[in-house]
Image (tube, rainbow, N blue to C red; front, side, top):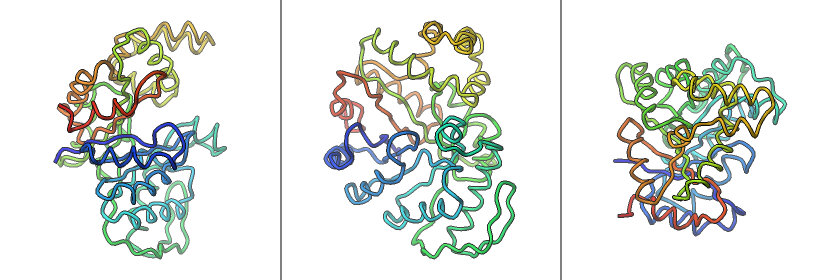
Amino acid sequence: MQRYGMTVPFDGPLHTQREQFEELEALGYTDLWSAESNGVDGLTPLALASTWTPTMRLGTAILPAYTRGPALLAQSVAGLASAAPGRFVAGIGSSSNVIVENWNGIEFTEPYKKTRDAVRFLRAALTGEKITEDYDTFSIKGFRLMEKLEQPVPILVAALREGMLKMAGRESDGAIINWLSAENVATVAGVVNEAAGGEAREIVARIFVIPSDDREMVLGIGKYAMAAYLNVPVYRAFHEWMGRTDALGEHWEQWAAGDRKGALEKIPDSVVDELIVSGTGPECKAHIERYIANGVTTPAIAIMPVPGIDVRKAVQELSPSAG
């Protein structure tokens, strides 16, 4: 079965979005994926979806490993798993220094180990066993999750570079990826599956879409949105690994020098075309299919908030049921 997801929630108050969620289900979308950065938390939209869309799979992409204590993280995962048995996927990741340190006041140290430890602890905690253990980044003394889960909860790891990708393959059920081109997927998925001993793991990709053929608007909004990520150290290192140092070198230099406007102009149009899906509905769908062909098992489409874009129409045009 080919999974096909949408990022939620949409813009606007959550309590007004039931009809939009239900329409996703009717259009053939199989998954709803939330995030956790500076909007609503990653769990509330999925809690609502657990009753609004009773057949859809629900996933977090992602919950940061730092911003909930280990026990609370296990309780949070158990809560959604109990609300939607067999339909919840826990996506866990390090997030970034911006979200963890700048916004939450938590030291962003040893992200690889922190994520690995969170995954290992969750694996154990969700079985209901009593845990007393010293992990590298935290210690647990006598915690037992009292919620008895009906079905196991798949755990995915958000990953960019080889270390995290290999860990996702070894320690979890798959990887969550974003801000990469369709062509980059083959490299990334290959690392994950090789680390899993050749077993195919789930690869969830958040794919950013501007459903418009207004070229000037797409480039302007795309470059502005991309700059917020390209200059986060973990994302910069990822794109260096993907071979974009020459393409983005001038952008990084001017951004570091404080010339934000000039830096935006140095992002090549070709990089926007690689990292953001745009165009008419059929053109966008064809581009998304390239991600799937290169190894994405679950696209999690994220329609970027753009003035003048009819999100409902875009949802329909991008759906599995669209011609």
